[in-house]
Length: 102
Image (cartoon, rainbow, N blue to C red; front, top):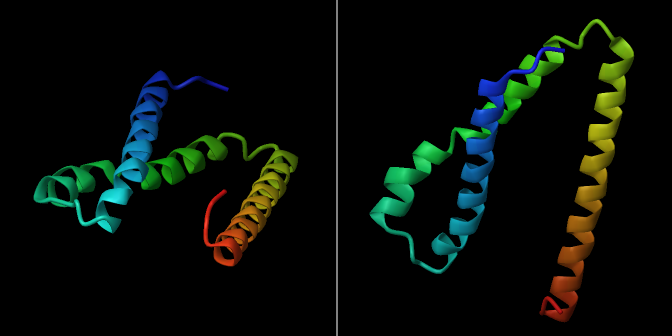
C-alpha cells in the first residue's frame, strides 16, 4: 500500500490537537475558560476527530479488496470499544463508591 506522508503530517497535528483539547477541558470545569480558550483556538482544534474518521475511511477504501481484513478490523475495533467501556464503567463505579481516585 502506498504511504501518504502528507496524511501522516496532518495526523501528527491532529494528535497534538486532541491532546490539547483534553488537557484544556479541565478549564471549563474550573471556570477558567476565557474568550481565547473556547472561542478562538478550540474551533480550530476541533478538526481532529472528524479528520481521523475521514482518514480511516480513506485508508480502508484501498484495503476493500481483502474482505477478511475489513471483518478482522471491525472485530478488533469492537473488542477495544467493549474493553474500554467496561474499564470506564468499573473505574466510575470505584469513584462513586469510594469518593476518591486512590
